[in-house]
Image (cartoon, rainbow, N blue to C red):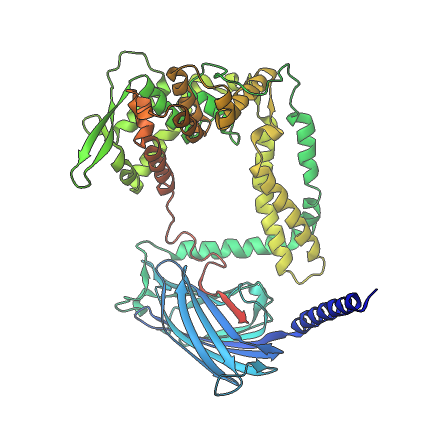
Length: 594
């Protein structure tokens, strides 16, 4: 070995040693929050003034601290001030994505040139919050996290003082109850202290106050309904549930560890597929002449086999356009100087339509004027909750029409046996809820054998989530007829998705392309078909055919986007339904050091 090589090896070892030393030095860094003091002032106008004091102890060198305060919908934070004792500070306050970020740079010198090291620092944070107090018709409430689960460390003890606007008929609750040390209400002031709160846990206060204590409460959230019974009910349910599971979580934790065995048993008894005499690689033509909604129900909706989804609904519309039951028109928009696409509903079409096809026409008629639907306006129409809910109600009727006509329970059984899937779906619903509960209880318990609940809860939750995500035919079973049907349509879908296959075996006529588009929509690959078609037929817009023009003018995409809007809008959230649930309060958040 020459000197140059030896020098390089020595240098490499020095670099590695230095890196290890740096990592070790970083590992020696630590900080703690020994105690915190929180003071809340609830004003009679609904404004909440918050003062926070945190006692930090730093071992090693740090740049500073931060505090993140999440803001629920409608809440805002103002007048943020920060002061520190034990270090000089520079403060940055920003707000994004519903979180107020307070970043405090700490320095050992007034010139702000030296970072703090091995120091004790008190941080004083003050701010006002609006719309954290909720005023119902019968009671006013404040649900506030005195300590949030997003802190980087736990805390040894927390003290809080809460000043209320009135001194009569006030009630308060503290959760989780395991962290309560002392608390009392005297006059209009609540004073409380906590036990040690571990990292990842929260400590929450719920106060119920008379509505008469609030005058001109412009800074409060108003909900026009009674709230006390619902809040009390939520509190009682949470307390009873914790008490019950606290006596049984060990057994449930152990049982949950062996639950995957149930899935294995169900699979081997009810989920293995029969052997069939079919070994095709792909299909160039639609394997059957079934309506696109039926193909969609059996092939594309693998999580509820036999029930068509929105793709089947959209494919049915394409099929009606191909039958000229639905026509196309264009209209010049004078505001944009662009053509708008309109659907013309031919309700008096002579051909006998299936029940589910007539239902589609009835649904579209709800958004038509003089039997014309402006697709540019459909998305706006379905953004209204009342329209969206009506649309989804009618859509569910359409789903039942398809099942009644083609896939009732007797007919579906000739394709698919869902017994195993039904068993596992019910198990997954139970298992997910039980797993989360068992895992959570294992975290909060002070008993050593809570580790069984944590491990069992994790196993049960993960297994239940996997079962939820698996298609029905994993634990369910195709019949021989259904298995061949499934494999052929899957191979046809593979053909439609793979442009190289279409290049090798392009369709012989435009009529076939139309079938590809319709069944492609039912199988969720309409985009692939249309792109492939444009590659083969350069002047696709020249074809005087409604189904091609529908795609060319973006009708399929506008319709698809509008239906997605309808599905989303039809499921609004409630202002007060979860008020009182443990862990659902304002404030909280977390913080740490950097």
